[in-house]
Image (cartoon, rainbow, N blue to C red; front, side, top):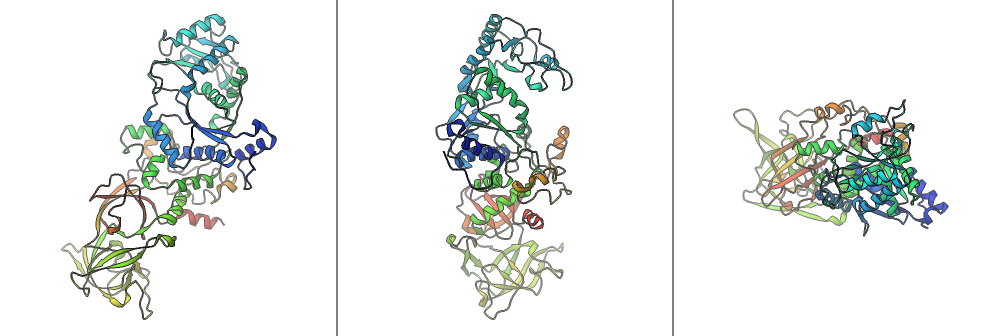
Length: 586
């Protein structure tokens, strides 16, 4: 038996620890991550992946990757392969334990026959709408199906004919025979199988009846020997049904444990809604960087380490809460700060001519790749007479606390020299088009030998050597709410989420007004900016390479890049609002 971890445990890990201590399941820990292959995974699934694989890893157990492919109408191999890639990218390995619900279709069928023979299941001719109408309400019992008391032989015959394809879609179902007056409506003779003449992505046309999730779920767990079946909170009311099926079959009985799923401000967490956006081409696909899909976050430049750290920070709880998106960005920013090389890029360029720098001359200056990582070393950046700086770094009429470039003011060019603005060139419309400056050759490297100081340090690129780039700037897909409370979640949610569980519920989410959720879409969620320049060190950067653009933010090379065309996605800005929130909360 593995030694229990010493750190503070969430309630799921506490259950596992207690089970190990009591010798339950012969000291085994076996979990599973069970996605439906009907879409791409998103950040909410990442929380479940980290929980299930993390528990197995932490307690010396195993975790299966199992696809619940029980609905052939919505499932595709594309989704299967994307999900496998996402789980691997997050850093987890199911080894040889890749399973599908469809692996067990025959065994599920045989179990259903067993329940029919035990008079615990029957074939019903009611339509699904009629089944719902017969179910009753929370305050009134349901009504028995007129077919509930069919004989065992009739049910066996009809169920066999359902399997052989003799009946039309929706004309019959197999239902469990439990209690139509049960206080839990999930126990009121639930449907176990429906007829669906549709080709399955793995079994083809071998089956035309398909199991419902509530029926399939427990059987899959039982067959695989799962010890802890960890589900999201909406399955809590389904647990009595999970237990009932396994008890009637006298099968190995895993323990179902429910936790609150992840909700993020300004974020669509419904796979159905994400599919609508993809199908309507509102976004460029499942891997659009504006989406909370793992593929979208990967393309945007998020690291797997940052997502795992985020999932650890938010913890696992039994109550519903909404996490501020700023915490996720904080985790991304914190990780990228440690690992991203620095480069200089100018997104909105203003031309600068160093008048006393020799024409036709250039030199290479040493620049630090990452001040957080000494092993990253340095690189060479070219300097020449004509440069570009950010247009926002110049003001002709500078306010008192503006410490960047203005007429007559001296500033430092990062890694280069002190420069002073001597003249401003404008076009006929009065727009500033060029600055004329001088430099002090004695300040090479960015410091003055006479000890004089400047208050402003600017980034820049050499016009002669700079590479043009396209930059894609992303904002929330759900329009930001200016009234979102900054103190919505404590910087350590695991320790204090009980006190803050509802604090950010007013923040904009896609679930606020389900009927008109598309009205909440942010029309400015993507801004494409052309005309920028970046230093030449990134010329051969592969898609997925992450950088910090000094003084601007973190960016990632997009797959749309090609030789001679550099495209960058902004991953996250440098400004860390969450750090300020955390500081206030101390």
